[in-house]
Amino acid sequence: MKLFQNTPILMKGILLAGLLSACQNENDIKLAPQAPTGESDQNARTALAVGKLIKDGQVDLSYQGSGVLSQETYPNVYYQFTYNPQLITAKRYVNGSPTEYKYTLDMNGRCIETVTDKTYIYEYDVYGQLTRLYNKNQPNEQTVFTYNTVNATNSDRSLATATFYNAQNVKTKALTFGYGGNMAIPDKHPLNPDVLPAGVSKYLPIFGKFSSNLVQSIYEYKYLLNGQQESITQYTYSYKLNYAGKATNIIVKKYSSQGYVPVSSTDRKYFTPSF
Picture 1 (cartoon, rainbow, N blue to C red):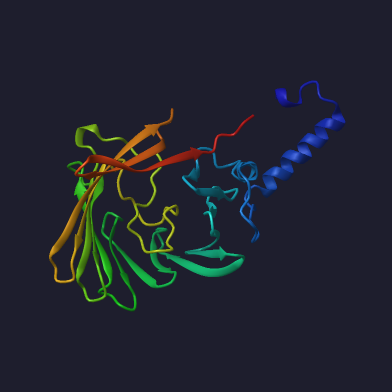
Picture 2 (cartoon, rainbow, N blue to C red):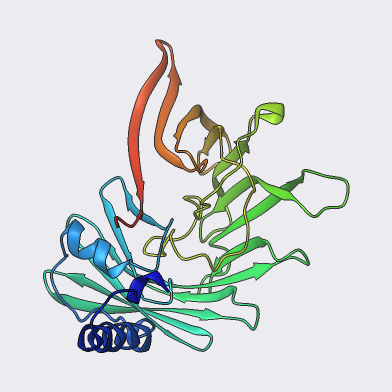
């Protein structure tokens, strides 16, 4: 191996010891409760997470040595994750004070229950895709999902609608998703769409597959308590991609009487080791 060529014996031993130590500890990287860390420290912690998303707008992400999500850091709050068979525990820190959240998984690694401010139950279809989530204590408070079939074999299905109901089983909102048809853009780093309950991570890949492609449009329908439609809002999504086809910038625009008005621009960064 060229690594040890022309290297003194003593130095070889030191290098070998260092390599063995790194191999031994690579699956044991855990973050103790602490203040959010800087980007350089975050990069060090994600040494084995090549290609992982480490920044999504104002959210910083870091990973354990095995590549699973370890911490989400927001401007005023952060979450730390620990893993056990069929259970993920998240500690939410605000001003140093922790609150514990839980994700219960089935044998296939899909989330079937979350405990945050409320307890939600998750149901899946035969394709392993999320079809319904509901408040365990008030089952009428729910979100129902439907999917479009992309190919004839049903092996690729994309989220088509998400419909939200309150505790009185009254429809309050519905979202329809578009993926650009023949101009579809493959999603090389899928995240959970913004349809999950408050406090549930969009970065944990435990809710099944929502789509193979990036969303390019969303229609949002809002309803009055009497069931009448209150408003329709159209959003469009455009992307800047890196060499690997992953989104590095997302621009969202909303259609109004003035045309399409920018709503947000979000930069994403992925871990690339520097050698």
